[in-house]
Each structure stands twice: as C-alpha cells, then as structure tokens.
Image (cartoon, rainbow, N blue to C red; front, side):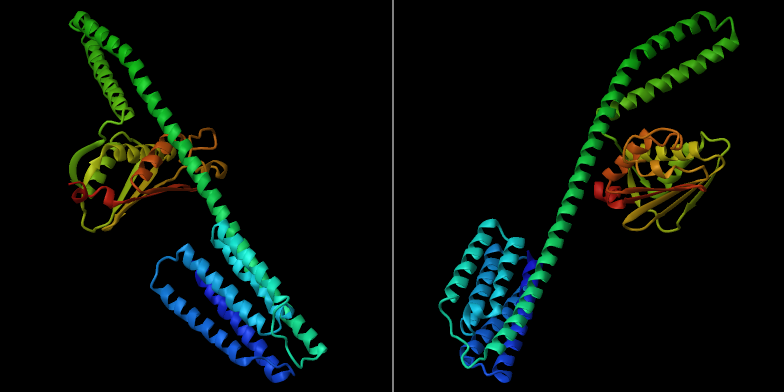
Length: 414
C-alpha cells in the first residue's frame, strides 16, 4: 500500500509537469486564451498538497485505505477543475481520469474502485456540457493539440497498466510459490508423523521377541556355559547385543513419542563436536577423518539429543558414501555455527540431488544411506532454524550445515 501511495504522488507530479507544459504552450505559442488565475491556483494547491503528503509519508510506516482513497478523490477533483477551465471534454487531458481508477483497482477494495469509477464517469459527462471553452483558438491548432494530448495520456495509461499488471502477476507467482512451499511442508510433516508412528509400532512389535530371546539366552548360558567356555563367551556377546538392541528400541519409542530430547547437559561447543565426531569415528576402520576447527572462543551450549542424532546420521551417510577420506570443517561466531562435511565418493545424480533431504528418496541414483535418514536430519536442523545444503559432483559430495546459536546457547536456555 505505501509503495503504491508513493507511486501515486510521483505520477501526480509527472502528470502536473505535462499539464503545465501544455498550458504554457497554449498561452504563449497559440492564440488560445486561458483563465490563468484559477488554473495557477489549482496547480499551486495541488503541488502544495502533494509535497505535504510526501513529507508526511516519510514519517509513516503505513498508509490507511481512507487516506489513499482521499488522495485519489483529490486527483479527480483537481483534474476535473483543470479540464473545466481548459475546454472541457474536448481537452485530451481528460484521459488522465483513468489514473485514479488504475491505482484504486491495484490497491483498494472493490467498493472504493467502483465509487471512483462512478465519480469519473459522472465528471466526464458533466464536462461534456459545462466548461470554459478555449477562445480564439484555430481549428488546426485544436486538432494538433488534441493529438499530442492523446499521445501524452496514452503513455501515462500504458505505463501504469504495464507496471500494475506486472506487479499483480509477480504477486500471484509469489503467492503460488508460498502455497507450494506450505503444501510441501504439510506433506513432509505427514511423512514425519507416519515415520514416528512406524517407529513406535516397530519398537512395540520387536520388544516381545527380544525379551523372549533374552530369556532363552540366559537359560542356555545357565545350562551350558560351565561345560563350554567358548560358548560362554559367545553367549555373553549375544546378551550384550540383545541389551544394545533393547536400548535402541527404547530410544526409538521415546523419540517417536516425542519425549524430552534435550539432555540438559551443558558443554562447550567445540567439546560437543569433538565428542560427537570421536564417537562416530570409533566405528570406522578404513576411512581417514580430517577435523578442522576455528580457534575462536567456544561458547557453552545445551546438548540436544535430536540434533546429535541428525548430525551423527549425516556423518554415517558420508562414511557410507566415501571410500577413503572425509573432511569435517567447523566454524562458529557469536551468532552461527557452520559445519561442512566433504567426502570423496562418486556423488549424486543431478536428477536425484534436487529431492535429497526434501523427501524420502531411494534408488541407484543416490548414495547409499542418503534417503530417509537425511530427510529426517534436514527436518531436525530446520526445526532449529538452520539450513542443510547439498552440493555433489564427480569428486564427491559436500554437505553445508548452518545452525543459529541462539537455539543452542546455554544462557538462552537457562
């Protein structure tokens, strides 16, 4: 609204400039006789109100509909008076009546536009019968002036229509893009809910057979472990793996039920990243991991388990895609944490890259592990106000992660 109001004032000044030029030409270069006193008063008052409105606009952040409508009414009034004193409806400047209607159609509700439309039609009709004619004006001069006036009015009308139609078209495209993003977010939320439900059901279904296996393992250990030491070692390992599976399933159930993900543990950011990477790296054997951190002071953060899962999952994906080497660069300042993960895998096909992280994808065109896990990781990072961007080529894949520290700093969560 305020932008259109600014354009209204500029167009008014532009129109007045053209009108003044026309009147100067008529008065000094033709035989026409104009009532200069009322015309000069009208132009002076119009300029005064325009400059006053411009100064007032600089002090405001918004313009009300009534104010905008009042300014458009003023345009119709001053144009009607000028046309009245310069030949009435025969004056080609009467085509400028279309300007207030265009602005109203682009900026105000329909009732305002119809009111202005009715008013301009009424004024145009009245000026066909009531006007101050241009005296002592030859027919050839009148025709020439009329043609140039039509040209001027046409230019103003075309420019305004082109601007507002293109602006409306741009707004429609932005609105459609926003709707598409909302629909995409809605679909993604539905997928996440479905995954959470699946995780909860899976945890529930696996709990019973795992408990049965644990009981049977204990019974076998009690009966046979004393007779066979090798079997005893195997059973001990089996029991530890069963315990681990039950712990994983328990965590799945908690996460699916949306229990508290924040451990509440306070830790320097650099220490947190080193612990996370070291724990992930302990499961690797043939991959060289290069860690690069900046030397700035490390702020204290509160560890969030969901973020830890997201970052760990991204690292696991990179390890599955990279045959020999992974480079992890981490930089932070007072406002933001940035993590870059580079692998030397075969990369991701361009046809698949646009969908990775935005939806659940799979197939031969995507690196192993870059489907559901990366989708959930990106969703988690975005929940913290961050971004995850993937760039892939023949030399490997680069994942850039940025997270605002305002969501993690210990002081903000105290």
